[in-house]
Length: 170
Ligand SMILES: CC(C)(COP(=O)(O)OP(=O)(O)OC[C@H]1O[C@@H](n2cnc3c(N)ncnc32)[C@H](O)[C@@H]1OP(=O)(O)O)[C@@H](O)C(=O)NCCC(=O)NCCS
Image (cartoon, rainbow, N blue to C red; front, side, top):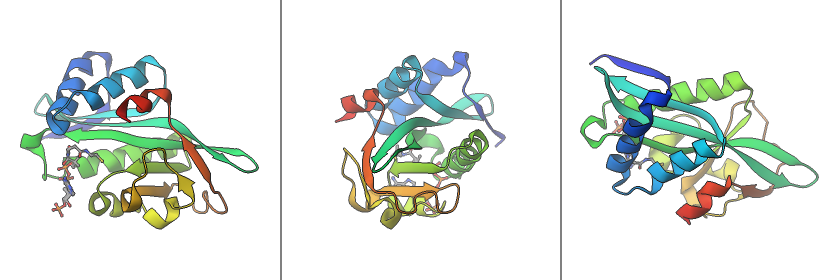
């Protein structure tokens, strides 16, 4: 299988919708991607292409940690999706690794995710690190943070504000 990970292009929009719909079994995440794009809130959006077919997608958007004394910029990893027929072949891992590299290159320092703990832990995401950050979605051990710059979260406690389109996920 020849796999290419590359930035999303305009021509990919329908296929990105299709991958999200198929992976999540609902249109909620596909709608979220469209709304974030429309709102100009996308930080990084990458696709995985296998033999010319779009089989995976990952998106990062900017969010704020409202902390005392200052608000801190971070990015949210959400959503990410791999076509059911292509899961458990390492595509998701490659998307996360490429996505985190792209965030680092942009200068992002903190990444937050609400997702499968066993999947995200392997990239260094940590639930204890996210504990001082209140998420509107709760999450317990699924609520995790990663410092792209060591110590970026040191001493920071506060409330996380997602871009408005996330409110529709409720
Ligand atoms: C989660 C997802 C993106 C992973 O993509 P993938 O290409 O299958 O992932 P990879 O093949 O790179 O990695 C597989 C690993 O992911 C983990 N994993 C995959 N799906 C998982 C799930 N539903 N729950 C927990 N862990 C999962 C497994 O631990 C697996 O590890 P293993 O190979 O050691 O068994 C994909 O399963 C998916 O699209 N799921 C539906 C949508 C979703 O849940 N998105 C993520 C929201 S946080």
